[in-house]
Amino acid sequence: MPELPEMEIVARRLGSVLPGETVESALAPGINALKTFDPPLHALDGRSFTGVRRRGKLLALELGELVLLTHLMSAGRLQLHPKRATLRDRTSRLLVRLDGERELRVREFGTKQAAWVKLLRAEEVDADESFAKLGPEAWPDPPPLRELLDRPRPLHSLLRDQQVITGIGRTWVDDILNVARLSPFKRGDDLSGDEAEALRAAMVSELGRVIGVYEQQVDIPLPEKFPKPTRVHAHQGEPCPQCGTLLEAVFYEDYVMSYCPRDQTDGRVLKDRRLSRLLK
Ligand SMILES: [Zn+2]
Image (spheres, protein in one colour):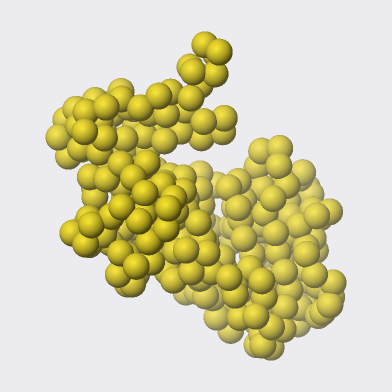
């Protein structure tokens, strides 16, 4: 988190209120968050927002000739607060003060400082390395997947590779693979034509379902914690939404991969990496 559905709703909500708003001043309290120095941040002063665009998990806040590009990584949040922060708290990475009282804040929770912001000239955005390498969008209209995923790598990692297809991360990959009834360990180059079509359909329907939930539940100022309409990811021990079998999981160091053994792995319960490490 946040992945494509979260950034899509952020883009929609900000896109409906930011255009026309003028920047009074901007500040980057996070030492490492701002990745560019030319143009300087104060070049934003007095400029008005003209649009908001999402690409994969990236968000581009457009201000005429300048673009604030941001990637929240796994623990960042972007919020539009009705009032300015009185304290410069440790989670703040970027503060954009608007005329009036409102303030746009990029904050980051957890120990890692990974979220970043770039201030670019509009013509530089598409060529920026963060943009240029991205694969096609996973939603709303991804290309046929048989060819796109024709690589000797497991689906769970392939679908999260932003250069292959962009927008999916550790949360929604589990729900997508469950709906498609495919093993997270099945290799991309082992997909049949039918499986590739089922996967594409699951991708479109699941990401669309989640965005639909957020349309109902998420509004400005944008949440610090998003609702989690997951049905499979991190639901191990609960019934599979497709067949009712209890979901299983493989635990990695900092995330969990959840799946249905009946629908996805031919009844096999895959090794729990956490347990196998303890048994060594
Ligand atoms: Zn199932």
